[in-house]
Length: 263
Ligand code: URA
Image 1: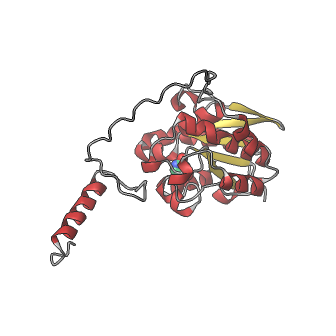
Image 2: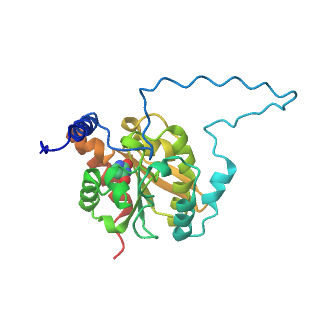
Image 3: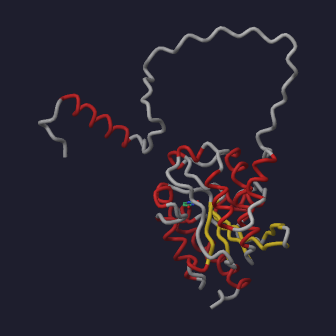
């Protein structure tokens, strides 16, 4: 409720905040406010070109610079991988996120689940899939006899993109070496990929989740091929309940291949 005894400026500020919330703004990205109504600063004078500068060739954005891939490829275990990820400055998303969402579950899990990127709940808690989609994921896993605590769950991108936007192709390319090293270290017997973004990133396939889901794929790792089942993302299933029947089929195929978890 609005405090009507407050100063008129405070009332204006409260109304402005309510308007921001109604427009979907849920994140402040800078410490210093920006006056977006101020006239643009005059363009700087172009600097004279250096006499004989050698031509510079930019690396194509889709290629991971070798040092980025090496950062994660050298991790000797999950603790080492987590420490390297916490120290990684190469992806701008980490500066806007509250927490790094590494992943959780047994280090020797037989089943590994990979989603797209953390949302607001995961950003606050530092744990993947704890919001509404995560609660549905827990039910999906329990329904095939693989309760959440038996499974290692993570995301391709370990930092929340602001406003829950989709990660860009460049952000996925920067973060993918992290999740691929996690797969190598855990060496699960099967991977469950949630949604088109995770499936596209891990399998390098961009034909869409509707085509990919329900068909076994394979991921080559240094210790052998890992069977991969792509399925719908639980956030999509929350919006499209009839598609749960198809996801259920995919989960049954996974269960048939994996059997029961170890006791
Ligand atoms: N959606 C994802 O892809 N990952 C999470 O951790 C939460 C929601």
